[in-house]
Image (cartoon, rainbow, N blue to C red; front, side, top):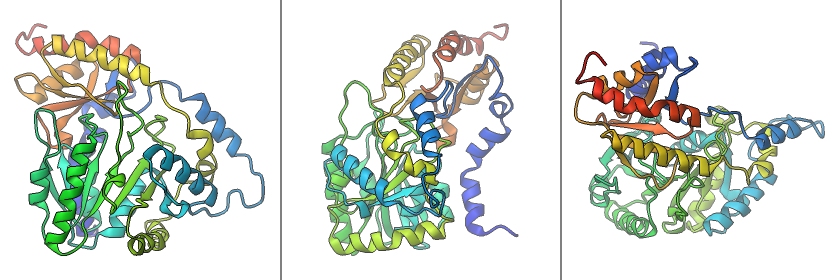
Length: 397
């Protein structure tokens, strides 16, 4: 077998998403005119003019080194340390910031920094479908625990029970994909205390990765607390691709909590560049690094996200679907009505409405709607939700 066992395991974990994106009815029709695409967090309208202007301006060379090799450049490091520090109430130093190719890159760097082959990492489901294959690809062992229904709260007792002698990392995603939950300070304080006790119990430090790519996308004035301000042994992954709705322009960072003990903080700082190089030069390109100050204050239209959320939630409930009101992200997490989820998904697809099946996140009784769909897509899809459900009981519909 020419493919390594680790990549075979990662591919198996990614198979549901892989099939959906490349081989399903959605794959065949995702670029067709007239569909309503609620699957992934992709743009369905033209990008923010500020992104275009920033990239255009920063692509013009100002010296002979403009397009030379770039690690984490000192100017964007200092800029992010100041602005993220102000946002999160933490005194980051520039050296605490490692610029990466999106949060995807930041997460993979974090996994390589703190996990050895055979180490265990705990995360809660339903979850972003890439955690498991990424952990398997580095030779780590995923330990999955279920969120507590019906509100999809962190199950702290289950997390505690999952931590054992080989556990090195716990992953928390807030605001949470796919449910839209934003975990409050009280819950995160309990998690911090739990990890402190667990570290003492197992005899080594258990690190926390706080995955925060949606933290600037919150509804109804909801606040945000980062675990990095509560548990010193926290790494933060962040992406600009969500708030800018430009996932194809890879820009993010991994941040080390400045509350971490100095010896461990220095060890991580000293090793992060080696990890990024070993992963295939896992740094953003030169233009995106130069553009950081221009992009920092930009955001997609969050009022439009709230409007689509409210419009869809009302229509879904009227049609007999359950939808969890999101506190953040740009997703709606919905429960299929009684019946076969695959048949319900097909009934929507028959009507040119495509949603992300929960089976891609080990939650087959649910589906996810991305509010990054256009208003036109939303309005076109509203009658289809009711019609698709009714059609299963009426073959002539």
